[in-house]
Image (cartoon, rainbow, N blue to C red):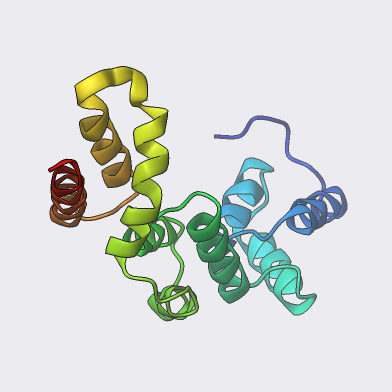
Length: 163
């Protein structure tokens, strides 16, 4: 898995500090990076502890930042955020705290807000635009039943508007 020759510990320390300085990182990602650099397990543990002590690495801070950014900017559901945090091996407690700090809007409200945007995006698909929009919402982690329930409600209210 190594891409390059092993670095000496001083160079590695500097490189990993810069890596953590650029953005919030999951401890799992930092450890993977140290493995890529060819750092021995004992030295990896020491470097990780050093980063935590210097407040350059924090699992809870990473989880909160990840959850907030993906909820606000990528419009992911809480379920998808949780799954991705689990994949990053974030502790269940930090996942719960990060999810709890997100706005308490229901999924139905999120779907209602995203649906017109996605329908406009897939307008060229004609009658299939709702199907494409539904698939996009499901990829964002929303429950299939909830997506189609909102779609039915929206189409029913549109039909009653036409009558």
